[in-house]
Image 1 (tube, rainbow, N blue to C red):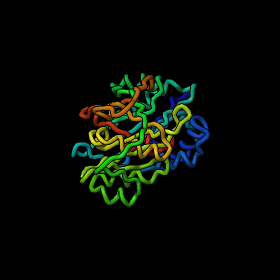
Image 2 (cartoon, rainbow, N blue to C red):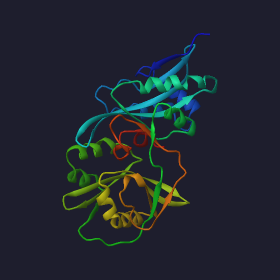
Image 3 (cartoon, rainbow, N blue to C red):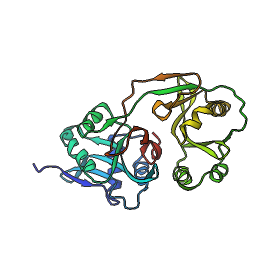
Image 4 (cartoon, helix red, strand yellow):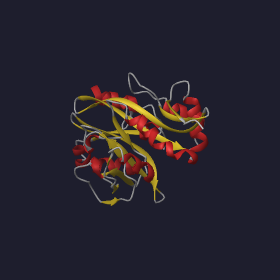
Length: 282
C-alpha cells in the first residue's frame, strides 16, 4: 500500500476538506459553514487553509489553519492558528506528519486554542508552551460610575478608535456571534470582545479579548453593571489577561491548556484575535 500523501488545502480542495470536517468532526456545522469559516483571510499572502492526508485519493485527516498579519507592540508579526484537527482512527499515525507540515513553515508564530489532551501532548513534542488556563468568574453588580463611558453602538465604537485598534474592530465586527463594547475614560479606550454564554444555567459574558488590562480592572464595576443590565450575571475572563482580577470573583481551573510556539513572543502577547476563537462560532 502506498504511503498516504500530505498536501496543502487550497481554494480548490477546501470544499472537500469542509465536507470531511462535517462528516467526521462536527456534523451540526454544514460543509458550507465549515468552508465559509475557514475561508476568512487575514494575511496578504496566505499560503493555504491547512493540510490534509490523502489515502487512495480520499481525505482521511486534516488540520485547518488561520493565517494573520498582526502588529504586536508596534512590530509586524505573522501568526498561524491551528484549528479543526481531525484524523480517522485507521490513520492516526499520520497525525505527526500533519503537524510537522504546519509547524515546519518558517516565519510564523503558531497557536492552538482548542487542543484535546492528545493534541496538546503531540504539540508539546514540537516545543509548544502551555498558557495559564485559570479563568476568573466575576460577579456583575449594580454600579454608578462617573467619567467612564460604556459604549456598545457600532458608530460610537468606530468614532472612538483609530489606527490598528480600529482595524481590529472592523476585522472582527463581521462575526454575528461576537459582541463588542468599549470602556472609555477621556482619550483612553479598552475594546472588549465577548460572547454571551450560559454558566450554571445563568447568562454570562465570556470575554475573549480586552485591549487595556489596567483600564478593564480599574473600571470593571461599570462594565459589570452594563452586562448585568443586559441580563448577564457574571463575567468570565482568563486570568492571564489581567494584572489584577477585579471585584468579587472565583478562579476556575481544570481546562485543557491552550498552547503556542514562538521564537520571540511571550504569554502576555498571545491573544485570540484573528483565530478560530473569533472566526468560528464554537
